[in-house]
Structures are given as C-alpha cells and as structure tokens.
Image 1 (spheres, rainbow, N blue to C red):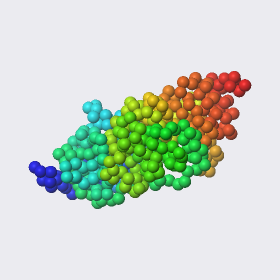
Image 2 (cartoon, rainbow, N blue to C red):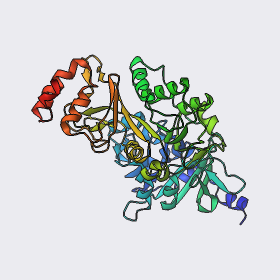
Image 3 (tube, rainbow, N blue to C red):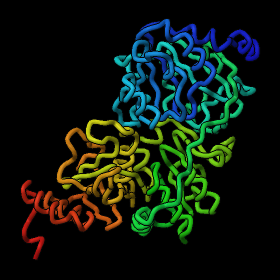
Image 4 (tube, helix red, strand yellow):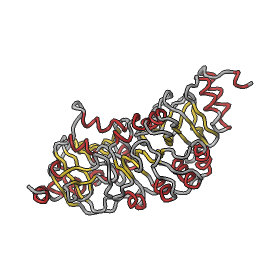
Length: 448
C-alpha cells in the first residue's frame, strides 16, 4: 500500500485506540510535552472498567485525565521516570510511584529483554510528513526505544507540536505504527521561564561564569541558578558557545538571540545545538521548530558520559537540594519524599570530568527557610535520613554557593570537610566543624 493508503487504514478514533488497553497492561504515555490528549480523555472514560493498568511516563507538563477518575488507585498506577510537581501529587494521592534511573540508560531499559515491555505506547507526534514519518517533536529522549519494544504503537498527531530536526531516532515511520489518532491540536504546554534571579542566584552565577572560557560547550539544568548563569553569560563578553544538553530550556534561546551560541567549536555535531527533550515558553518552541541549527537526539547519545567527554571545555551546571561534608549531593528528594529524579545530572557530572578542560558545577543557596520555620543550612554533616545521594562523593567536582566555589576532586575527607564548610553560611560553620570533629573528618591544623 502507498503511504496514504496505510494512513487511511490505520486512522481510528480516540475511543477505538483507548479500547486496546486491557487490565494488567503496561502503557507508556510519552514524555514531557508529548503526552497524549484525546486518547488520554478516552482512556479515562474506560479506565473505571479496568484494573491494574500500569502507566509509565515522566516530566508531566499537565495533569492527565486518567488521574481524575474516581478512586484511581483501584484501577491504575503511575510510574514516573522523573517527577514533576504534577506527578508528586499522584504520589501523595496514593497511585504514583518513582522509577529510579540514570537517564542515559533509559532507552536500554526498553531494549533489555529482561525488562517489562509496554503493551501499548501512546505518544503525541507531529502530523505525518510526505515521507511517512511522524516526528517526536521536542522529546525524542527514549521514545524510539519505547515504540520498538511496544506490542501496539498509537500516535496522536498534533499540528501544534514543534517539528524538530534530528540526527537519528527523532521520528517513527508509518510502517511501525499500528493506530493513528488525529488529535485536538492543543498548544504545546508551556513551562514558565521564572521570575527575576535572586541576589543569591546572581552571586552563584558570577562565581561560575568566572570559570567558563570562550567557546565552551554548555549544559544547563532547570531552575533559577542555571537560568541566572545563562543570563549572566548573555550579558558577558564571552561567546562562541556550543550546546549539548539533556533538557533544552529558554535560557539557551536567550543566549542564541544574544549572539552567544554558534556551536562552531564543538568537536562533534558542529554547528548544531543538541538536546534530548525540551520544555519552555512559546519562544522556545518557535526556536526549535524545523530549525536546522538544532538537533533532537535520543538520550543515550546526549547523556552518554563518553560522548560528553569527547567535547572539549564542556561545562555542566546543575542544581542541588542539599549536600553533606563528605561531598555527597542530593538533587532529588527531601528525606524519603521524592521531588524529581536523578535524571541526567550524574551523566553530565561524569561526562564533564572526562572532557578536556571540562568542569561540572553543582550549585545551590547555602540556606533555606521552611514556611513558618527557622533558617536551615543546605550543607549538612550527613545527608538527611532517607535522602538520595544523586551524585556520589567520588563523582562531584565543583560545589558552589553564594559564599564560594570549591573543587573537591582528589581531596581527603578532612580537606573536603574544610572546603565544603568554607562555602556554608557563616551562621552554621562552627556547628558543622563540631559535627566534622565527631565524625573524624576535621583536623585542628585547619584552624591555625
């Protein structure tokens, strides 16, 4: 059959597509801005008839309709590879769970014969092009691996999904699709760019920017501090930057529009900004749409530490929740309460150190004040009971707060304790020294 004949034979209603899902199925629900709309609503109508449907997804940008059925925990559970605020609510409501992973490995999970395969994959894409391909939009991530593993592949098309050019695994051909649903063409959900950087953000950003050379290749995490670094770079005399990142955010668009990004110095993918998924404002989606200067690629490529390490002067900039005096970094939980996930932070910490001239920066404010409580230090003697060590002490390089920047690579435990305490809030340093002494990682000679 021709491409158009195949299309006509596979075109179904959202209700017909939803009818494929059975009790006990594993259902992959796309990723980030690629979560389905029409099939989601149709499946929510059917879900009360089913039980033990296991959904998988992550970085949700809107609350799915399947969350809002009566007594969802009796019929389904949501398994997140990386939690957003929406998914944290599912956890609190008793039907959400977290699936730990290092993001670079995610496609392999689906290709591993010992892992549970999706019974159904329901993914939002662009409309089919003249060659029979449905583009994954700004989230190739692991979706090619999901589709290859799934027993049934359903694509829901959306004319408002940005078309993202790629290197590979950024689209699926109609011959590999079982059902097509023409969606409701909702606008891509937006991630607010955030407010103005705080004074703490700017102090941290200034310390980091001083360490970045011209022509460096950048990876920025999400959050106020990485955004402040991007803004400060845009205002600086630095330039000729490359981009190779897991998540593409508005900060990169601002840098591009300021003339700071050329990708001319990259060892690989020269001239192209490379990313695994993207979320931001309409400005970002417009920048990505059919732009030959950007490259949407699978996450096992973007986050491979050896690929990252092959790019000279690689700069990785990410946030943390807290850290301890041993140099362990928690970037994903508050005690046992999951906030987000490891994601690609560890991938880029490892990869940046492999890069010639590369540096990884983990940044955070030195303190926080809980609502109605007293100021607390984010630098702790040991991580809070139950908190996750996102980055082990053996991997971290630069740690940054508004009080300074330290490189802990190669330092003994007492040297690490001294360095980390030096960037703690002054109000907590004596207490941290006392705790370091109790743990046997403090030398009196430090105080001479």
